[in-house]
Amino acid sequence: MNTEIQHPEPIEGHDELIEQVQGEDIHISGGGAQSVEGEHVEIHQGGAQTVQGERVEIHQGGAQYVEGKTVTLDKSGAITIQAEQVTLEMSGAGIITAKEVTLQENNSAGVIVAQRVDSPRITTNLLLANEVYGNVETAVDTRGALLIGLGLGIGLSLVLSLRSLFANKE
Image (tube, rainbow, N blue to C red):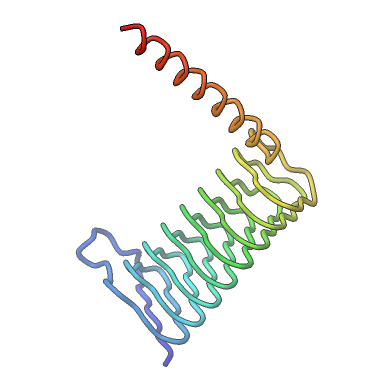
């Protein structure tokens, strides 16, 4: 079953937002939906709150939560992406969790958790990856996250030790 949703003008207001779209091949152009689920989901100049599919492609659009086997964003944005393979082209994401992440030029992500990250250049706040190929600018990498965790653990144990020491004296 093919599902195509087209609107000549962008939808304004929540009253016209389509609740749920399901099908094998879903193409949304210039509109939006709360929930989209299909084998191949393509959104062009539109958006969705939740997108689930084997293959998800978003071109000049956005989504809050995207889950799929392969996810591609082109000049788009997503808050959370969970997939096996993620490709960003001039796009941004808040949190990416994937086996493999490929980032072209001019991308950004708040947090990337992946087995492999391949990028000529990426800017991110937190990167946790087994393999990283390319120039990555990050506030916290895997080593830094471990050191922060260690420091927080030592600090917390010190505070608890002092608290129990002073509690025993009263």
